[in-house]
Length: 186
Image 1 (cartoon, rainbow, N blue to C red):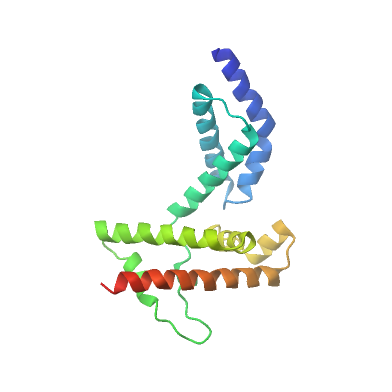
Image 2 (cartoon, rainbow, N blue to C red):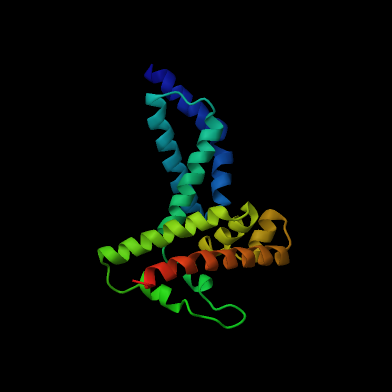
């Protein structure tokens, strides 16, 4: 039985490895991150093959990869606050205190709770966006890709990408403004 299991794992790696790595590379900043995520996917796959069969192996692998990419983005706390809380074109910048709440010098249980709440709300708000807006925002803010790089990757005009990101930022500002008001009223 262990030889059959090992053969299944090797054939799955041969069948999906190259395309899965390409899929991950398009969604993370560098090759080292992509390889780390791929390794995590293969580890999870090999652990699961022992306990239960997987009906749609390809779909399962890509879903795990997407989840690992999302987890990696959630862990990067140094991103996107500046872009989210720059004042609107009208010059209203009443959310500058939000950054102070989330990024204080000290780390207490309260600040950790607020950070976790923020990231949870951010990813919930991102999930509310159309996929194109969400993806442009993630690539630009979390993966540090330029609009030109995204345009080359997707074939979409730079101006269209800028517009999509603008709509995403407006939505996120609105949603996170509500969280800010809830946190600061106490």
